[in-house]
Length: 391
Image (cartoon, rainbow, N blue to C red; front, side):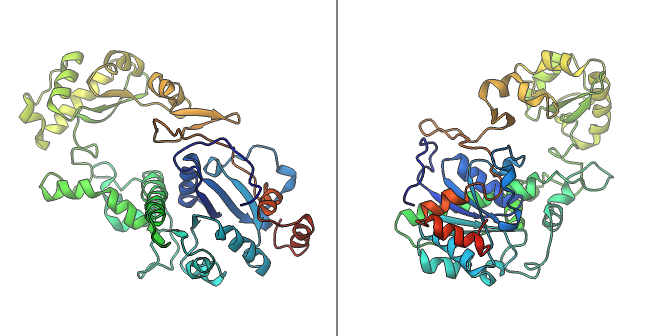
């Protein structure tokens, strides 16, 4: 794009250009990940959402950080042409509409590949581009429900518990889309043509459960919710309330870690030896004893005693406490950018560090700047605004 404003190089994806058709949840998360890694991401927001009076003020949606925004009416022919002009020099496009929507807008894979055959076209949906449910609405919870994952999350004898929307929207959805797009970019830069990445939450979330399917195949995971090693069934892999009403997390699965936990707490498990502690028939009595022990001190007292070392115990911190945890603070797991504390880009790179390059933009905040980069004159930009193709 001629005239593109110079920015300090940052991240392994510096030089990659991405067009993002504005959406919510997993799509913006994928775009955020790419922007954190240095990609130049332009977010195409709806023209109707542009509020110029808000430009220059912080936008609260952190998922939109790191990119610029142009306000476009995708239903206007002139607006569609603006997007295709962006696509012409882009490496990837991300969209999260229901199947068939971008095709009806004239911005589907065929339309975009006509102007840029090497484009990676990333699609984010819950159900995927095909199948009986492909055209249906849904949310994280209803995508997890058919996969078996939701059935497995919760306490024994109780109903399944929504795991926030981290497993579906962001882990199985947005992160898989970002991974898929980078894989396709790698192949395209090796000489291959562009292609479509069909990222579906049901696919990605199910993939995240691969290890549990392996445990089931080994006979090490029952179908009973809350009755297994990793779902709160085992008393040595659970949370416990402390004397001050706060909690600690215990994850002493392996024998040597459990032995250190027992030695440092002075606990005498009612079940007895190592083999006995792994027997689900002994878990209820052991859990009661552990609960009584952890209820004898405050959370921070237990953390001071057990967190240093290999006892695998950590304090359960709230949102405000987490950034101040010594380990997280030392590693910079949280950063403050534009006055807002937020998770830092991850993972880390030894030579091409990822950074937050700019705060989340308001819709349309960079319309003039982007149109200038596309070669539009002030007169042409004014005409587009008069026709309400952009805002």
